[in-house]
Image (cartoon, rainbow, N blue to C red; front, side, top):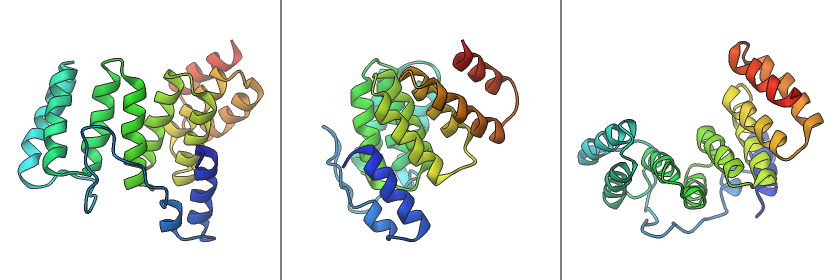
Length: 194
């Protein structure tokens, strides 16, 4: 299923036209080294919390390889921990392995189809990987999930800019401005108008 088709399915699910389970029906195989969970939960639970917080400290100290190792340990114990998948994608991307990070986020999306921030991060990484149309579709899904998310609007506008769709980016700026005034918006406007 293409990102656009998935976005449409998700919008239909959110509007009640189809069930949310139908929107999440596209199962993505886990990337190499990860397992399919019996039950996915967003937050790290129990004895994996220490490893998760250790990974967070490594990431903040820019020790991305150590953060990745700690997060993979978390996922070995609690497969399908959404927060760990999200942070793992960031750590992998920080090591210039964007395509792999996008795969991790695609898996996270299949487990957590209503988690807007996963789509927003995936859209940003798709832009970095020159997948502009995918990035727009992914950002559209994030916006459908949370129309008030400035970050999702910003991701969409940046994808449109990179795709050379400046008129669409300008209209996207209106939506972004409606969600947040200030310096971030002004910088985004300068990118579109430049």
